[in-house]
Amino acid sequence: MPTETVYGLAASAMNETAVSSIFALKGRPQDNPLIVHVDSLPMARSLAELDDKAEKLADKFWPGPLTMVLKSRGVVPAGVTAGLHTVGIRMPDCDGTLALISASGVPLAAPSANKSGSPSPTSAAHVARDFGDELLILDAGECGIGVESTVVDMTREIPVILRPGAVTQEMLADCIGKVDCAQAFAPMEEGQPAAPGMKYRHYAPAAKVTVGEGEAASVAEAIKYLYDKELKKGEKPLVMAAREHKRFYGRRDVAVTGSEDDLREAARSLYGLLRGADADGFTSILYEAVPKVGIGFAVMNRVYKSAAYNIVRV
Ligand code: TXA
Ligand code: MG
Image (tube, rainbow, N blue to C red; front, side, top):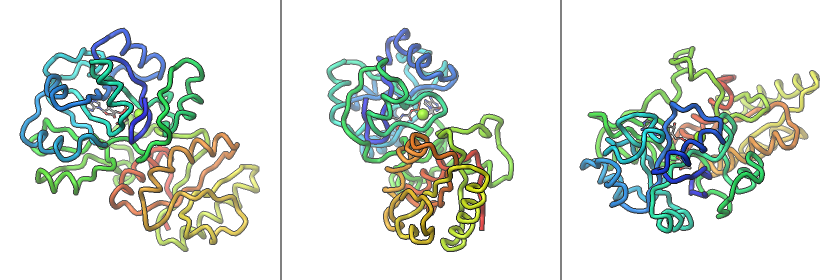
């Protein structure tokens, strides 16, 4: 099913057999809970407890790219929540999918519709590439946002962002007061992974990803140096850069991530570019970092992970 963020691999959240087939199809570890998608507030309230802050956020950001981790009422089976006492709920901003939920009459559990570990899908073609004819795909064109929803744990005294997205820490704080953000960039800030699982590549294409970060002209120099070195070694490198910086790279292969002035473009283009690089046979991606402001924070969270924190700072 399409959503405004990425495509989801959906099944009735109330049907354990259907839910277990999601894990099997994706190759997803059973201990990673699924997000439950609802079409209305009453449906959300029937599955979980929404306190005042949660009600405020639902009012402000639903339908939209915000998942709230809430205290479960025990209605959603353990296969969805990985046995936790909480459940992640969101109302997607996509008419087709809201209609699908309404027609089904049940909430839909859905992770992103990619094989585990690979970049999330932002078009029906991406889903078809990972799953072939195994699935029926509801095609609503390209996803408008392009990175997964913000996940915020509402069960803490001070709500904590577990995964950054289009709804930023600032936007949440404006609505409900103090909100924390858990380790979006911890592995690189502390010089080593905070937890063993964090060292693995996520959202990753087959090509090796390197991030260039710093002042634009210096980043371009560093990326050009790496590009030319890799080319000599027989690699097929691809630069991913802002439209305004394309000219820095001369005749080298460049894919445009978006404009410096609108980071939403970088979010929208990210997964399609990573997938496209693989499809076109590139073996190395040199990604110009975008500023970690607004949705750029979520973009860099995903880019770092796809690069397994392989970052060149200049
Ligand atoms: O934008 C999105 O959120 C997309 C679309 C399809 O809605 N879905 C998505 O699902 O990205 P997935 O499974 O790829 O990511 C869900 C994230 C995981 O990091 C999972 O651990 C977390 O949400 N999550 C779900 N339920 C949780 C819970 N009860 N407690 C903590 N984290 C939870
Ligand atoms: Mg995912």
